[in-house]
Structure formats: structure tokens, C-alpha cells
Length: 488
Image (tube, rainbow, N blue to C red; front, top):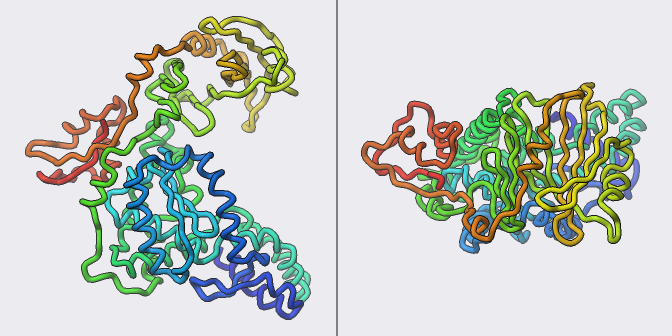
């Protein structure tokens, strides 16, 4: 992976021979001092891109979390780290996103995002600072511009290498460009870790917190896979798949960073727990609640239940339920029916266009007009499946939509069970639905992981959940007076 970026750096030197105009596509990384290929993207253009994309990010991830004190706290830590970087004059914007997903990322121009789901998993200020420092490192190293340069300039790089080094090198240039057209490369992630460690140490934090948090993320990933009934699929659940990092790699980056560990490094556990005490854990009221087999939306005032053996996942744009065997899936979302269009027309000519739908029928769902139709197809694994679409009226031009995917010829009636469970919530029922929240608790004499886990509002794997959100290893005692995170 490192040779990929090295090839582009060599290409920048080569391009200087070819053309002064092409040389403008290269720049010096403020953080590393190395020449990078940016495709001509300037720092002011990076800031413009970040500003343009910021509202779209907020829309995609449920907006900023509405807690001014928490937002201010995260920004203060981020600003401290940014001031220690090689771009202290760049105006950074730090935003806590109202998302339960464990995630963090950065846009060019200094826009850094961290989710409340990630804040709930971190155990002290140093761990949160490690995440922010890593993302700041991506910005200061201009990795977004470098990736853009790789995308726009792959052909130019290939041409330059070919002219200077011959045809074989030109072919090599094409293959080297491929990893750079994807997410950040392993080298860029390593570089961001190295820079992040540098900023942590300059700001007085314990840089080991970065690798500690990655261990927590790996444990959280395994837990989510267990909860989904698919422990072998742990890699798909959070940012570890897009951030190819491990605690060992972060330790290696810390060694290469070369800066000394502070004498009395900051951990900041007490202040950190006080700041996240009471934050929403899991789904928010605006997103609706997926709990067990029931999805309830207090603001839109409806609920439905999926059949036994299915597990719900509440995503930003839809609700998905998958059975334990992984061969059947239910998805739910909302859409708008074009003005004047009937439900049948919407189903056949809109949502289901080109699907060769058949077996259409009308019926009602809790007094609402509804239509359904089916088709048969093949998924990527080659398995033949039946797809059933169901659409029914909500309010105005809104329509509720269910899609059911089952093995072809399956005799199960999961769609009928799910649709029959759909009903409107009364005002009292809707107001009774509350989000889960983090509750910082001081361990008392006699408390154990098992006894405290029984306080959590979960029936499945409560002890494992308690250990993961607190970074408690199996067999680790709970000292009296220790503050830990519960969920209520």
C-alpha cells in the first residue's frame, strides 16, 4: 500500500519534467512536508467543498445532536488539538452527529464529525481526543485532496511514468492507482494515526488512549455481530471496515511519530463521563425505536412487529429486519406518491417499475388503502427469491412501504404477520415512548457486573453490553467508588 502513494509522489517529480502546468497539480503536504498529487485542488477549494457538503452530512446523519454544552465541550477539545497541528490557522468545525452508529470522519477544509454513538463507547476524554486527532490528521495531511488527485490524475500519472520509464511502468501506474480510488488507503490511515499521536502528545494527552479505543471498537463490533446472530460477520458493523486500523498498527504509528509521551498525560475520565451523562443511547425519537421485534415511531405515531426469529436494525433511511438464517429480509421506509397517481400506478409504474410484478391485489391496513404485488428474481449469491412489495397510504401524499424477500417458494407468511401488526399509536402511547439514555453510576459495595447488567433495558447479552460500553474485561473486578456507564 505504501508503494501506491510513493508512486504518486515520484510522479509529481516526474511531472515537473513534463510540464509546468502539470506541476501545479502537485503540492507539499503541510503535515508531512512531502510532495503529494492533488489534481490542482487548492486549500481554499477544500474549504469550499467542506462548506458545501456540511449541510448534506447533517441531513444524512440526523442533524447535530441537540446538546449545546456537549457540542461546546467536543469543540474545545478539538480546537486544542488543531492548534497543535501544522495548520493552526485553519478554522475547524467539530460536530456531534445525532446518530447511534459508532463513527467519525472528516471533510476537507476542517469539518470533523463524531457521533453520539461513538461518544457513548469512549471511556475518557483522551479516547475521544484520539479519535478527533486522527481525523484532524486526515485534514492536515490533505488526504482528501490527495485522493481527489489520485482520481483525477490517475491517467496523467500513468502517462508520466510511461514517458519517463517505459511502457511496463505505464501499465504499473494503472494498477497502483486503483487502491487510491477507494477510501483512505492503509498508508493514509497510518499517517493520520501518526499525526494524531503527535497532536495528542503535544496537547498533553495519553496517546495510548487511541489504541485503547480501537480495542473497545473491536469488542463492540463483535458484540453487534453476536446480537445479529452472525458472529462471523463482525467486520461489517462499524468504521473498522472503512478505517483499516488495529491497536497494533496504532502502536506502530505511535513509535514512528517520534514525540515523547507527556510526563503526566491527561486522561480526563471524570470530566468526560460528566459531559456524556444523560446523552441519548441508541435510537432517538425522531428516528423511531427498534426494540426487540417492535419498531415504534413516537412522532409519526405508528408501530409494527416483525415475526419471531427476525432482528430489527434502524438505519437512517429505512428499517431492516433479517432472520437468523440470513435468507429472508424485511425493509420498511416512506415515500411520496406523485400528485393524482393511484396506489396501483405508483406500485407498478413507480416503485416497482421494471420488476415484472404479478399477483396484484388491494386490501386495507388498519383502515388504510393498500396494494401488494410479487415477483421472482435472483440475488447476487445466485439464490432464487420471491419479492413482495406492499404500499399503503400514510397522510397526504405520503406512503408507507414494505419489501419482503424470502427464498423462492417459501411457505412462510411473514408479510401477513408483519402487515397485520401495523397500527396507529394513541397520543398517550406515543408520549410514553422514551429514548434510552446513558446514566453514570458510582459502583457500591457488593455490586458486580452481573447485578448491574440486570439494570439494563435489554434481555439479550446484558453482561456483554455492560462490559463493552465500559471497556471492562472478563473477570475484571469493579472497585467500589468507580464510575461506570449504565443505560436506562
